[in-house]
Image 1 (tube, helix red, strand yellow):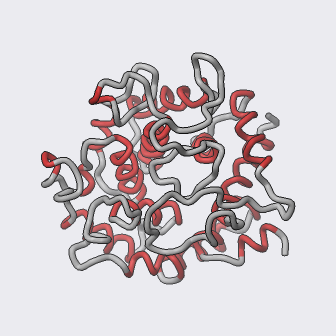
Image 2 (tube, rainbow, N blue to C red):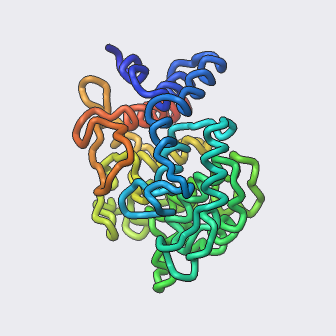
Length: 315
């Protein structure tokens, strides 16, 4: 079985992206496969888990990876069609009924879900899902723009006095701003902030210190290795996630990404697949991979897209 055939022998949320990004399938075939996410496989199972109160796991956010925020983030990355009846119904319940009570700072308890809370890494993930599903996240985006640091990135520890940005927080916000632009909510201010943020990554070649050029071996907050590839990564940064953002943003690859791309390519196994290097602690609402150390369709799909982006630009 070829790698592409292996990827196609999967859930609709994988298949439609393979058809679109790797095989050049006709648009109608891609759309038909994408439409199945709402009624089959992982997407349908996630939708069925929504509670009567509009939430997942009874919470706007939790540390278990099965909350409303985490499920909506997964559904967006799976590609659930925002225009589908299933998506509109689920998102309406979230918008109308889910708040941050019991899930964040006390001052945010009565915030509607898409108003977010205080941490930009969390708010970035909320805004990513909200923008993708056509919800009003203008207030959340305005807050994120006001929290950008002088070096171009973001950091959840800024209120405690940190003046340096965090790769973890920055990637969460960058993905949100890009999704806002894709959804038609972009402004010159949003685009300018996003460009400053992506320069933060590029200046550091996606995993090096600006001051010394030394590789950042471990995340100072969570201890994660940035060369370990995960999906979903939640609030964690890694080099494949950074590269996927740049690819999705249409950034022309240059020498600043070459080392990170080579590191991703070096992880390809002899059978042409990429493993799930790490799974972060928590409870997944549905199993979407075979486990840590096993071949990962999500990592393989994403890595192949990045390599095509890099090679296609003649970098």
